[in-house]
Length: 330
Image 1 (tube, helix red, strand yellow):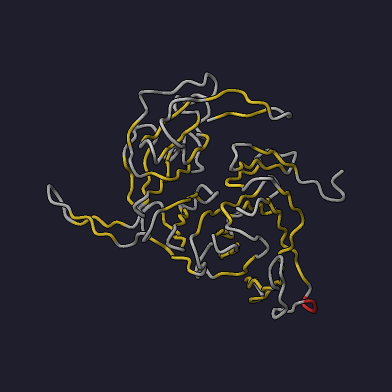
Image 2 (cartoon, rainbow, N blue to C red):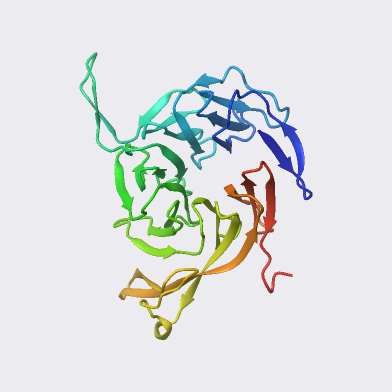
């Protein structure tokens, strides 16, 4: 693991210890807490580890074995909220769990109902992915209690993180769903797939698919928003990073049957108002493209307030930090 920083993108330090490939990593939000740092997991060496980002050393007391974990994500809460430090983890066997970073205790198995009392308890699997879970994320709103998991089985699932029940299964992609994210305001869900498309979904019932974004020529691995929340960024095996912007259309411009090669078709979003329901019309446009010499596998958006920046990793081990600058940004 490498930690980068500064305007010049210099390496700050390296974290060495995993015996094989690292499959997921994320910053702990518990700033100032003894469990702050960088959480990593490796499907291949079967461990979950916590690293101190000031010294580069591992918290060896924290390390524990977890053979099947493939991806991890922190809940958005901050101390003193008692829910702070919850970790959502996806597994190679299609299951997902929530555990506490402080105690390392299991809090919840998603999609599993426990029946019985006393010494006899039966776990009944109500919902589970049919293949490995490869990506997961929490809803950005602390009070939402929702999360997403995506899987090689071609679906994404929306979960209630308080009770563990599945709220919806998002079906539409033709191949593995490799990544997911919520919009900044939490109103929409985005999933990316090996079928070379991005899908936009409602983040509440009935969880319908609103639009399909096309343009990549290879499997899409991940998606992310940056500072403003206006631009959706995607990385693909086709060696490109693409930035997408959702443009609002006037009613007279709305042509839902018009086909496009890059971007999305026109689509309508229904909204409620005191005077009744009405529709707004949109279309996704590609506004920027960055081409790499190697396939791009992962991406993360900036969380600061100044610049629209992203970091993405390539198959050759290189990392790019990119800033989106459009006309009028200078």
